[in-house]
Length: 246
Image (cartoon, rainbow, N blue to C red):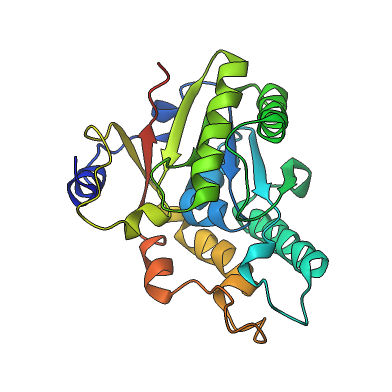
């Protein structure tokens, strides 16, 4: 199925409440970079926290690839900044910092397989065990970013370790795919209404100041989320695709 048709169909998936998507247990959100959790799952995290559902957030990469040439923010300082922003974002959504784990794999070089990927999968599985997770959420395997694809693969490894629960994907950069890109069968899954959490989600996204403002202005190749991209992720619904576990 072409990406344009697939994503249009995804935007028409049935509305479900959270406990219809995840009937029991806690939730683990796997984010390739600091900020992906707020963009793709901010409403989900806020809804779960408001409902007393255990949530764990695992951030896979160290995030230092966003501004690789900044004199003012060399890698160690940038990593610390991005992790601090993530903790602030999590607080906006109601998630305590103690439930956020940073794996610090190299941004832009997250492996899909091998010892480092297996160790990351083990860490995710441990977080899932710790909160009695009934589901894992990770970026879509067709997102056109190597770390997003790798994180999807790692989450699949973690789910295989657990041997239970569902696996769901949330598109981030998938929305920018060329329309003719083939992405497989029609989507299955659900939309989650997040209207009551839109303000919290917007605050969480804004907490990632290094990605949404000119906070780091000395890297001409530095990344910044475009307003149109932010607007897409502060709409009334979040989309979660069922991942085939066969």
